[in-house]
Length: 112
Length: 110
Image (cartoon, rainbow over all chains, first blue to last red; front, side):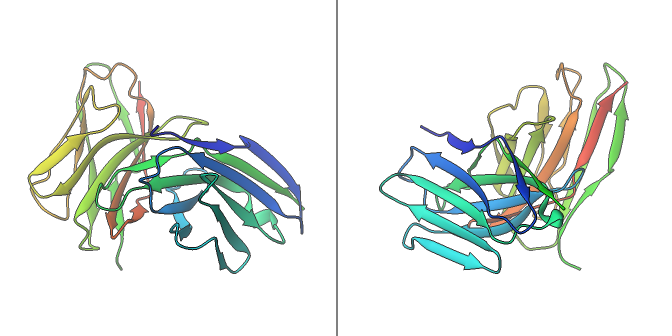
């Protein structure tokens, strides 16, 4: 019940296309859902996050869609660029517990 | 410049040796974490600390030890009991659910 399932494992997208990464969770106590971007040899960087009181959050080309009833959330990268090529992790957390559960990551490659 | 500093960036350890990875933060965050990342895999929690002088085991604590004597510092010791220590180690800190990571330490057993 503590798992966060992330898919796909890897993704190849043409420049200018839309990249979509999905995550699903079971624990309804989770109330914070961040996405992290990680380049090789670097630490993950917080990209965007959402709480379950909204269904969508947009920051620039990055959008999180959240479906509370289905217990799913997804990251959409619009107009994908080669510089977006990285590994993306979703995560879930319950406020006050300080424990983050991470997905297994999606390796995105954007072709020029 | 605020952030999380991990050192060293690369570390080599001989079998049977203990090594300590440093993690310092100047973000005034209460919570700090250590994660292990293996190639092509996600992040696995080793230890976390919510306040000074207190810490809890994560999912893979065996063979590791930590201390939290100061709010800013959360060092991780990889002991000789850890049978497969070669990995990328990430330290993080958080406040109000927002977690931020350091740049990692790559540990290799030689």
